Length: 219
Length: 211
Image (tube, rainbow over all chains, first blue to last red; front, side, top):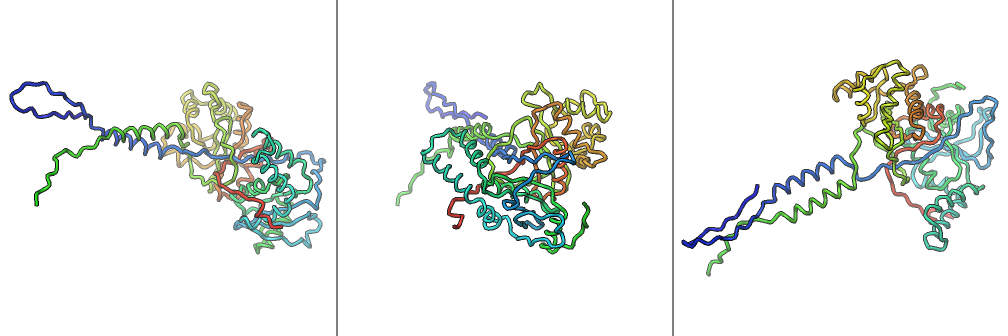
């Protein structure tokens, strides 16, 4: 709606006055506000992020043995119910189900599982951290693309860090699963994988969490 | 005391600079943001430190809601001419012996939300109103007797070999449902997936490790 301000003409002099074409911008401001509000509500500024995970191939051939791993480096993490983690080092054979080793209880807080992982992964974590600092300070001149590659090479070369086997109890939730994988990335764990939980491990979780066992030894 | 005479001016403010400002904000929003994808159900994503952005195309998404329903979504590919969605639905129709009309295929191609209906109902689903669709979404069946999710994966990979699996789950989803989806993916030889997460800043330094 354009509005033209006209100045009053005084006297009988017929003099063409300059007409100032002034437009009222208020409706346009209203319109702009409306559009901005609309776009703020229907769009999202931040793009969702993804975390990559690779699962091991299924063993289809019954004669094929699962890969052997050193028991001394193995760390089993059992995702329990109610946001709790139960973990035990080493390996438990199926035959020992009568006297299962005790499990340690922890949680997803920085003082919980992260401390456990960092304690075992200290040397690799230090190496990676030192490398990153040297890159930041410019002592190592390397292109940004190669940084990730170098870190993954450091991880491959490492032979002291833990081999983490993650297993989820049936009462765990998806958030726990993502959290623990995230902890693996935070702590720079070189070797970790996600596995099916064994029935004796379920029993270990149930015993530690005080759940009465529902599933008897099925497999 | 003499009265102060205020000049009688109309209290009008020039709105032009304000319009300019808003125009700048509007352009900024248009350029930096993208349309939020409509989703059949609300999903609270878990947090992680990962900073890799979600790929724009060549991805099949498994949406797992916290009431244990699984939805499937796949994109049309990097070029609209590729029409992956249409081809996948045609393949699925052949497998389940359902004949889709051209209009139904076009509808499926443009429908950008995840689908969560069994194949037997998908024809009815595509032909019904938006409000009626909501009630039909019971999740994709994935039992061993009628594993439609596996078929979706199979034909998506057949039509678009470059497709990557992306799992978008609610943080409160019970694990057995997720495990089922992971198992089906592993059965179909998909071993690398992306898990969709929201960004959370976590930084730890050497001081945190006590020695």
